[in-house]
Length: 204
Image (cartoon, rainbow, N blue to C red; front, side, top):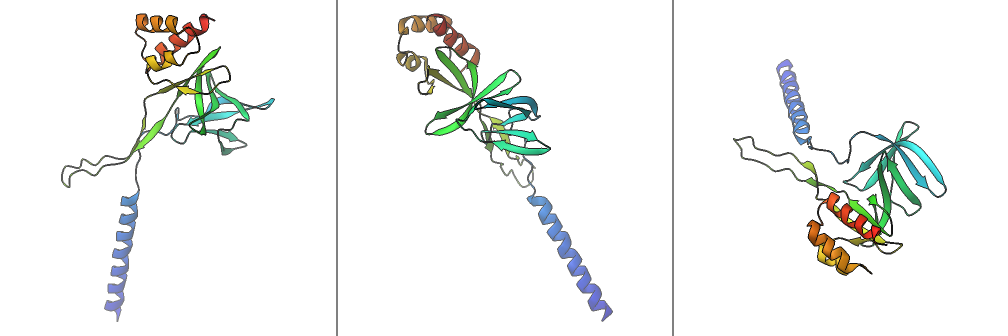
């Protein structure tokens, strides 16, 4: 009787180890971060005619502002009632594009405003060979920046090529085309797009 009892205990123990091992192997480590900056920063949320000073960070994977208040972590969805969210010298503004609202980083404002969309995507993990141990964990990875412009209170427009950017201008097309050609402006580089928009605003 005792031997049967010991046998049952050993089976249960083995099953428990297998279950524990199974649970451990299902835990997935994800590399990188979904945040533009992992740590919270002192920030200010401007909404209506009010403002709220709280620790803030931007979740670029989910396109959400996260903030802390009274020891709790809270989420700030993009809404047009929010005027802007300031994190140090960085300003995020809710804007509508492609029939949905999102947070865009404001780089410059004037007659034409320049925005950049910061995105982080989650790359799936990959299983390597059975013997070489080359498994790759899922990874949060920044996507290339996407630039947008807005003239006055008009619609937000994505900058595809310099040619399409120039053709969409209501004025100063010749001056901007010449400037872009001379300075070899790339629509993919923040510093150069900022230079182009500031030049356009200087012509007004």
